[in-house]
Image (cartoon, rainbow, N blue to C red; front, side):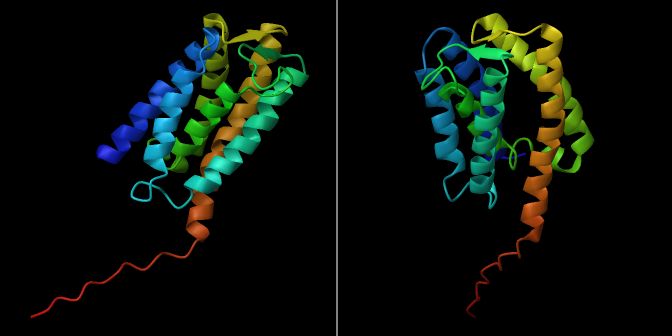
Length: 185
């Protein structure tokens, strides 16, 4: 594990509390600051993985759909619902962006362990949403079992699919030839 791994891992770990606690207190800037730093670091050409931009767009699209679905189904309502209380808020979209930028880096362990990704997604996601609700960043509007089941099942499917996509798509791309330097004698 090198410096690039640890910078990605550190910023990814700080993203959740920055976004969630920030939303709970009505402060958007901590999440934007941390995830902005992660994006600046990870999308720099020296640090970027060939699939990073693809994962960003896929995760942002999934985030809008999934977290808006929770609102529309009456399962969850979010604090700091900017830009609209009817759609996934900006701060939760920052979490999706952070996930996208960690898939091919500090979370790449799961690319070959899709069952583990499903288990962690199925258990960890409801726990994460629940912790966010306890901090005041969200409110579980529906009964706990309904929210936990919906979030757990969707993430148990979604998370391994994202790792599979990151792995499969990259494997389909032809390798970029290394530039060979000629030694002069």
